[in-house]
Image (tube, rainbow, N blue to C red; front, top):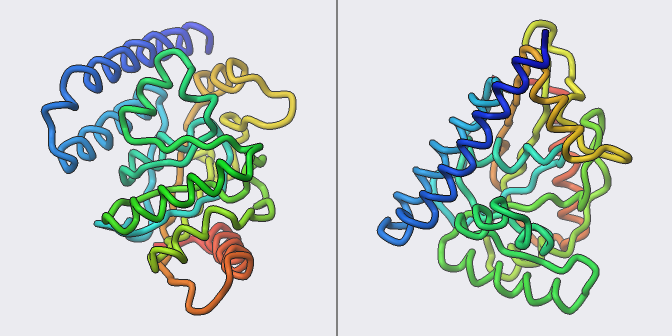
Length: 248
């Protein structure tokens, strides 16, 4: 009985992706930055509804930049969930730029792309991130560098935090998890790790019942003399604590 429901949801998702591409192509050139941000947030919340996912936001998202959001990483859904909570510019792997439709949407909402295997490109991206932060942008990174299963937080890579140090900008820790709304237990439906395929993860998500995406925003903090590795370690500890201690 879940397959017909999942297929109906899938049709809604495809239609909403096409609508998003139209908005980016036709409307975005005419909108201010604030208007584009508002449209992205509304579009992302609607996408979650198409997927039958309830969004729960805890804490206070940054209202304006400069700020760098640092989040744990679980799923391909994470970017949409965060955008539904607070529009920001993500730092993403360069392959996404060439993905059909998705690449157009990602580029349209201001994504900065990085060649993850290239140290030189990482330096280039850090430079552009620092410029964007000085200009007052809200950026977001996944310091784990890959997805986990949602039960723990992997060690953080520190390179991209150098942008916040260079721009003297705060970092706001952000904790994500997916849960079963009935039981409160972690849901593995949206996970995208190991041998998971994107289609397999998407199908599990479409079939899931009572799925809840929980986004917890912590208090922004500055480096205060810490180097990027020390700061990355401290931010990871904060996010681990946020995930284990529910916020109001």
